[in-house]
Image 1 (cartoon, rainbow, N blue to C red):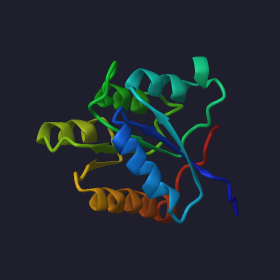
Image 2: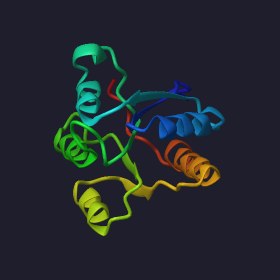
Image 3: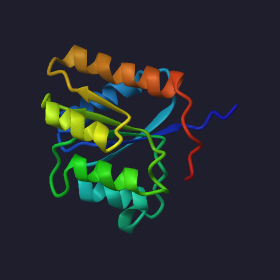
Length: 146
């Protein structure tokens, strides 16, 4: 049995949401390493291992906000799912948007799931833990290429 840490890439520009996600995952059941990038340009650099991210680990799971500076989450999602080397990474869209068009577009771009961020702190923690329970405990993730 492989007991290496699960690599999670969080693409999030809101420091408060980053902190909440870190807190929720810190007390989780699964050993994980959370890597955070603040915008879509850095997300693609991280995933493609360019520049400062040359030695970055390939994520087992990506948590992606849609409303990001420089390159938004929709563009990141499209690039990831069009790239044969990246498309197997499960992408959980975790965003404040409740817009039906965002939901449809995310699934059209092959998001693995779409979750609207709760504004309530306790509920946000529950959502992140549910993501962890499902994606890191229940689902069989593809082998990590990195």
